[in-house]
Image 1: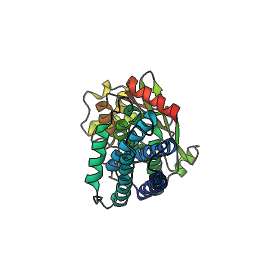
Image 2 (image 1 turned 180 degrees about the horizontal axis):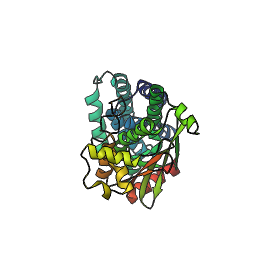
Image 3 (image 1 turned 30 degrees about the vertical axis):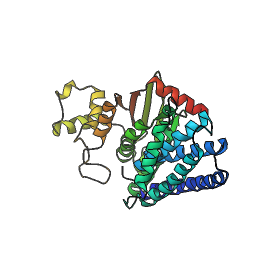
Image 4 (image 1 turned 90 degrees about the vertical axis):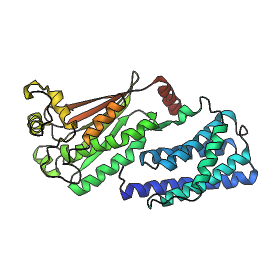
Length: 339
């Protein structure tokens, strides 16, 4: 995933603040030779926050270390601060802080932080000694809010380059989903928002002529219903022109049956076919005929469904649905209660 400099800078700054907080906690507790419940709770929140941001921003090494540390803190929260050897825990935490600082300082330059092998080896060995049992499933969950910064940043960046005005809104429960799903969905959701800004939302002047507010709106609604996770991204821009889509698909030779046999929903779904584009010229954000097909393939790979709907007079929406197992739902509920 390509990150903008502003988003990456915010990630580094926020993580650094959290690591400074971690450092103060460790120095205080090290002088006493052990952690206490308050410091364990604080460290758990620090690692959880760093992990969520790192997952969305594709910083896999930081995410992996933060995830393991989060699990260790979760174990201490459940079984007591003395359930693991204090000296070993503090040693791991100090080495982890050193590694995380080095990692954050070198990701952009694609350098390998020193002590990488050491901390990964220590964490893996120590974690393998702990019987997490049913502790870890909860820590596999990441808040849906993790998507906010990257989608907001993409929208802002595109609006500046395309001279458009777009408000991005989120509506849903305090939802937690499997972090693997978050990683898989970050790219497709970004592509849907890009497509809506580029193809859907008109310029402010065009919208004004049409009697619309100068600022367009992209709405993201999400939630869990009957073991199904749903995400709907809709916009109030230009509606899908089904006849134009069908003609273009025919000219690109991607139709699988005669044109008169396609239903409106099937025509709308053609925008997800690889190679499809209505743009005559390739631009920075579109025109290559790739991107939206990734949304379709990701949904299928995850056992989900995808539905595209066009408004009667304006806008269109894309809804993704995925089955969610009961264990993940229970973990999400526990996480929401705990927060």
